[in-house]
Image (cartoon, rainbow, N blue to C red):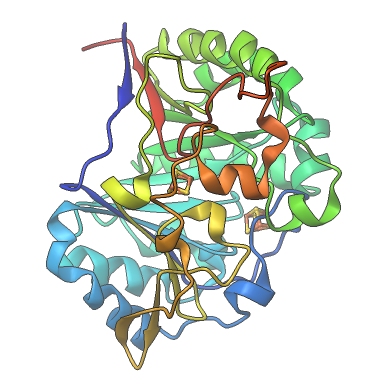
Amino acid sequence: MQNKTVAFSKDASNLFFHILTQCNLSCSHCYINPDQHGRQTLSIDTIRQWLCLFAKKAFQTNLVFLGGEPTLHKDLPAAVKEAKRLGFHSITIDTNGFLFHDILKKISPDDVDVISFSLDGATCATNDAIRGKGSYDAVLSGIPRARKKGFACSMIYTVSDKNLHELSRMPDLVASLDIDRFFIQVIGMRGKSAAAGKTAQVSKTLWLSVIPEVARTIAQTGVIVTYPKVFLDPEETFACAGMVADNYFVFPNGRVYRCPLCEDYPLHAFCIENNKIVAAPPVNETHLFDLSIPEGCVMNKIIQPGNLDYLADGKPAHRIACCMLKQEIRSQV
Ligand code: SF4
Ligand code: SF4
């Protein structure tokens, strides 16, 4: 079993491209915030032009098409084919499982590396309470349909206090689905989660007592499992991906963030104007990245301090890692 922290690298880039914010679901933890991210659906011409902005480093860039629900965009197949033509290192479609516009018939496994399905409960009751009626069945029928056509599939499970209790039931479900990778995410207190105040992150004790064990169990079946580090070990060095990695989160209103935790605020580092990337005026997220605080991630302290604890002397009990620092477990080296 190989268990490693995935180090940040400037040699690999990640482009998270939200091509629309429209969605058929209304998940209780949805991070999309139309006031901040726009309501528009990008035209295929604009998608092509914006992909070209990142084409210089396409060979080392992992591209993820997102929404909203990206398969609601009728031109997603054309967008995927353009990304392929430009030579992106990998192409992923993140979907809620509904696979609109017959997407599986309009692209091939040669076009995309992975179709990634979001599921937030091992049971229909828990998942659909979070993600909406029909979403559990959509994922559980969508994965076999995609696999039958030869697409590689992965799954994302976003952990909160509403579904942690079902994570230990996921290994059996995952084993039945023939997926390659399983991603555990931690719910971010932004978008609807921040507004509703009804969903919470889980404590350090709960996180550490459940997540690594479930990850190991799933990895034993041959599925590669990735989960966020969240709580740094005392000997680990803190690093902010905004300083040492190359990530871009692009939204349909032209905002380009380097840090997903900043997405509820007009703190984006760049914007796309007239099909050019320009630096956003100060103050923006880049002015926060090098602030050094004993709690670790500065944006975490600002927007989701509920995961911090302090000792009697006022010092933090632990440091919070960059939200993009991942632990990866796989059964074979
Ligand atoms: S499927 Fe994704 S975009 Fe749609 S509501 Fe749920 S979290 Fe938001
Ligand atoms: S999550 Fe924190 S550490 Fe990571 S990029 Fe954002 S500000 Fe930096």
